[in-house]
Picture 1 (cartoon, one colour):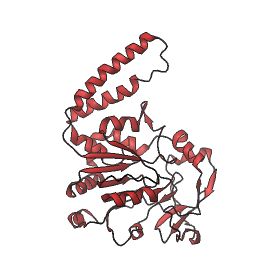
Picture 2 (cartoon, rainbow, N blue to C red):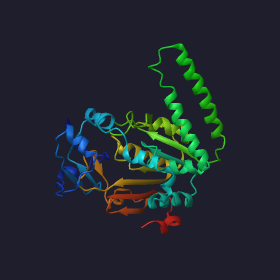
Picture 3 (cartoon, helix red, strand yellow):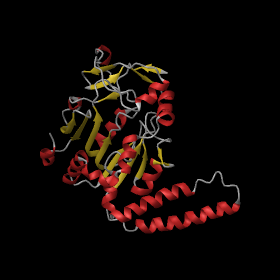
Picture 4 (tube, helix red, strand yellow):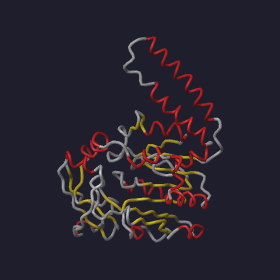
Length: 324
């Protein structure tokens, strides 16, 4: 059910993980780890790699088991849907405000997010596109659209015709509301279909997060894979607690660094890595990057074990007062 991690999560042949000592540190378990512990009696041990500046679980789930965890056992992304349900109070969150102010200072026009549509800034951008009343109505219509066309249990032509009529009417209302959209940014949603991300089962009130976000945000969907060659010029690429939810974090991070002017990484820093993660970052993670990059720490939350960096080949002086 688990596999030994003897290869660097960043594909670095000179990684020092195998020679690293185990981390001896107790921590309080997160509530969703109870779901994992119910089926998997694994006592994971973590190591800190001095070269990659990451905490890594010595053993972790194989692809089959990680797929089950993220699609059957605890498939809903708690943070993402929590953000969505609190969309109209998101700007009160200090870290959201800080990152939003940073992207304004950097004058970004094209933005990409990765593997979760509700954990970064897309929801904030959505609020900038429409009035509060219109945005509420669009959300209601989008949810309704995704539920109307669930027709597998309809057995009569009359019911199918009625459903289509309802869909046609609701879609027309939805498109009409979307006409109020203000000229905004180019949004891209990158998905690498890893087994350790919230995917098919990431559902709330009968609606999948990918389906709903696609209707709301009008982003361009990008199916990313390790040998992805298409060049998409971006101003900002945001990893909002998602870089550690990829089977090949090196591939997507390197792509972002090559193709985006700025990259923001938000990540967990728990030394004793939680069971649903293969690895976590550290406060010294900025030393992992090549000297050609400028790096600034945006925030570090010691209590929540969370950190954020901005990385770029360009100068970051314009945002230095917003960073630590």
